Image (tube, rainbow, N blue to C red):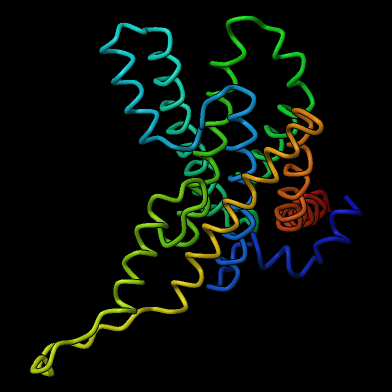
Length: 262
């Protein structure tokens, strides 16, 4: 833990995942989570030959497999869909539970759970891969749960302004802002509202997409180099981001218990 704190200063970690939010903190957290999601998604593809954050593709493949009578593959996709939903629901439960008790770690807790799941997958991946017939469905469901968990965190804290586990919406928004940027108002249209691109938002969107891509490259490289254990650094990064608010809650809880005993 001391190494993680050294890498990520305490005050910065508290701003990054703490209860009090700022636009800058939301963006910085979004950047880091986009990198983690890209690495996890691409590395997971090498493990099971399926992407686990792209629900549009998964639902489409479910329809294909059902129509073609490939019921096993259909059930794998259905399990991934339910797992993604379950991950999102889990985040909502954890955030609302912590919020009702005014905990500092309302957004940190789901990230710590994500870190624990990634750590387990990295450490146990080789052994799990020996379970014939179950490894692929279980891995797809686990990684889909993780992606749902993470996407719900950044969605809730940014009020749906930032997504990190898929870039379809990001690319769409980039196109919209680029269209505004190059739009030229025709002569005689002065009575109409002027169209202006949000350059700041455009920069954020492009950064998120680039970091997702960069994470994917590094995730594949890491998986090819060291295998499943490549997810361990990602888990440690999440711990570094989310541990300080959790420690703050632990300190508050300890102080309250001490007062009660007195």
